[in-house]
Image (cartoon, rainbow, N blue to C red):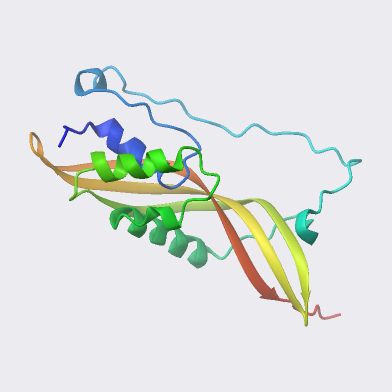
Length: 187
C-alpha cells in the first residue's frame, strides 16, 4: 500500500462530502512550505426581479428559504461520514457528482483500511435554494439545497509516524427533500 500524505487524506475525506473548496495534493517535503490555504468566499450574484421564475417539475422557488432543522442536517452529515468509513459512500453521492467513480476508486485503493473519518462539529447550515410544490391534502414537498460548515477528524495508523490524527474543516453542499404538512396561520 502506498504511503499517504496528510493533504491527500484531507482531500479524499472532504471530497467525499461534495467539497466546495478543494485541497491540493502534495508530498511530505512540500508540507512545510504550504502553511496556509486560500479561503473561498461565495460570489454574490444579483437577482433579476423581472425574470419569470423557472418552475421545474411544478416546483416554485421560495423567496425566503425556511431553515432546515439542525438535528436533520447533523444526522445526514454523520450518515455520510459513516458511509465513507464503511465504503458505502456511493449511495450518498449525487448522480452528477464530478468524477464520482474516480473518487470511489481512489478511496477504495489509496485510503488505509483503518482510516476513520469523524465529525467533530457542525458550525452552521445555510439554505442556498429552496423550492416547494403542493401535493394535496395539506402536504407540501420541499426541496432544499444547503451548505454546511463541518469540522472533521481523520484518524489512521501511519507505518512511519504511528497513530495520526488530522483535523480539517470544509463547506459541503447537499440536497434535502422533505414532505411537510401545511400549518394554518392563526388570525
